[in-house]
Length: 206
Image (cartoon, rainbow, N blue to C red; front, top):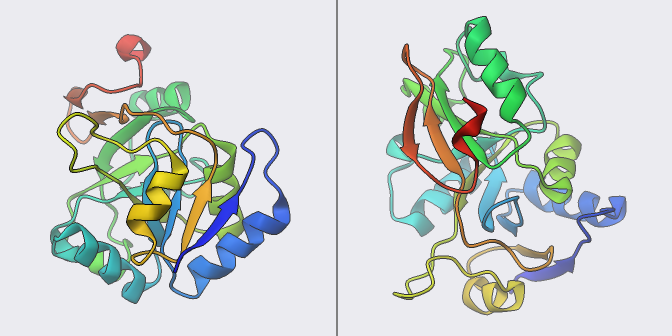
């Protein structure tokens, strides 16, 4: 049974954030709000938790396309190869925001991702997500929670999310209704920015 925790985005309660972080550190999975859709996440340094997420999504961990959700860009070099100034300026302009940027992966990536040539980096404009990652001290890996419904691609109501995911995760955070439009995915791993998926993030930043 998942614990259901209400957290207000305008002013997240540090005690509730600490409770979520304790679950992450112990290898738990959480469903949490972002500036786009609700996400499924775990501590990037916990192999068992990573394997649970991969199993739920039906993918091999080494071949997964999970995003790394960061608090800011300060530790980017831990996960991303050195990038040039023009790329960094795009990141600074767009983040925090509703974007996933695909960047060349560093050699220092956590073990399961060592063979990755690229990584997807997210810094969502959502205080709950940012406070969790900041308190944890490292990124969480994240993947959107899709809905099998033909009409609704993403579940937006936290109570309905709890019903569906109750036995699969350890915490469901109620941060209010989520969006139903995913992040805009932009590949910055080559010479020119490539739009992989147009989502909530405006393309006018380019």
